Length: 314
Image: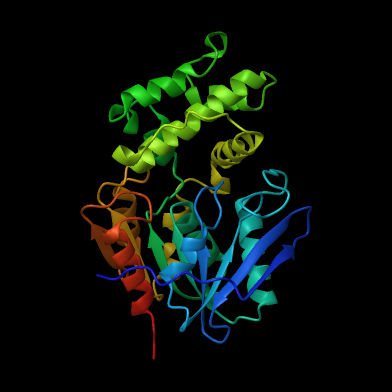
């Protein structure tokens, strides 16, 4: 069973200037002359972590990581203006051009898989191969599953009720998502922090399952900005037309693609991986019987590292 590679530090990092107020943090690790591979983090509200460098053999790969607009070390943190999926795709192209790379491998999980698919469908000539984990397809049914009363709420009804109850009683309607937006962009600071904490708890419970531990600490402004960013993308339908990613996968049928998905993934049910495989028949389809959504655990790490190792050509 394969494990993560040893910890490494970047050999270079910089802030990518954009055509707006955003400065995007980029780092390079591993072999500067190696095969380029870019790590696309999830969210959209997260950021890169040191362990994200470790899925790749640093002697073979030129490893590129970046914190998406408003995320992680990118500045200004939490900025939503000029923060869209097309903006993120444009940032990836700027990074590729600045690093003078002809093609690269895309490695993305969850929202990172969404970004990988969207980028590849726009810039397919720049993609050498793709590794997709826990793929999020950004369809209406995916949001209904995550937030609706007939989705994963049936598995965690207590935590879902806590999320619903975080909305002030006088502001509740029969549309929980709209209620969340109204509070988060409202003026009641206590309500904003209450909803922020409940949203983070809900997401943590669904993603981590039995490993989830509720956070009892103070909700920070950082937390509020992070949740607003996630909701910003959701309320804009992730800047995609309905079913857009699946509809345009015919552009990618010549590429080596590995689809990796945990059978126990409750954030992005395995149906999404199955549908993706139907439109990408050449893809290697790896289902992990004991894994969930996150890129942790022996089984998941083995699959992800095996996928990067399988793309070595010498």
